Length: 114
Image 1 (spheres, rainbow, N blue to C red):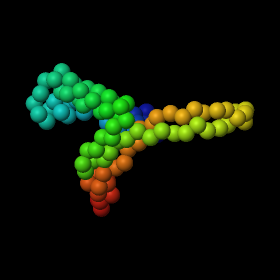
Image 2 (image 1 turned 135 degrees about the vertical axis):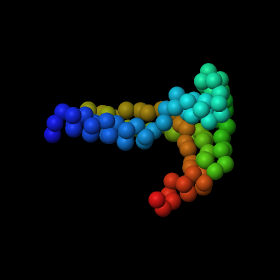
Image 3 (image 1 turned 45 degrees about the vertical axis):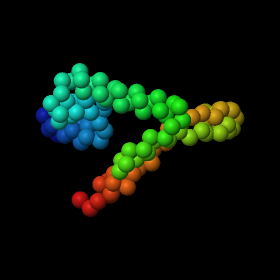
Image 4 (image 1 turned 120 degrees about the vertical axis):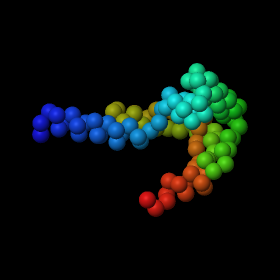
């Protein structure tokens, strides 16, 4: 394979990988474009939404976005685990984790026939 062909393959692979996730700045860009907003204003809106969601979850509230899904906080319990390198038992304390349950509409879109 030539260097040029290798580069082309790498670029194609990059584009395939790139569409597998979306980062916050891309959400800001799409919001800005879709609603003809300045980037700064779109960034403030996205930051405000995420900050309010974070605050609500920190208070133990559940966030329900109909059709999309719901976020909630679950408490894990204390447990004994093992260090994989040494095999020594270690105590893992309980902690709060965020769980997401997919909504019906989103699930339907993800599982529809292509």
